[in-house]
Image (cartoon, rainbow, N blue to C red; front, side, top):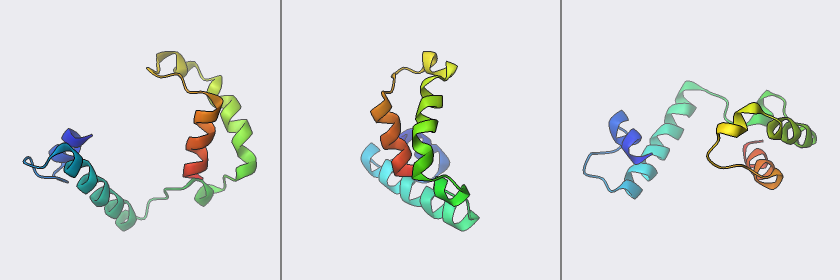
Length: 84
């Protein structure tokens, strides 16, 4: 992630990886706000009541076979709750 932010110019080439990620996240968040992108699922109508169905469908996804880390039901729920 640090290299991506450095390449994008969101961090300097001399920045440590930790600083580059921190700086890059701050700048990316600012850019998202400037552009007006929606960043939370509730902004497009998703609610807590949708979580179980999304988790079920996610765990049935064919793409999971190529994922280097197999998420558990708990993992998927945690991610969803962070972004709703």
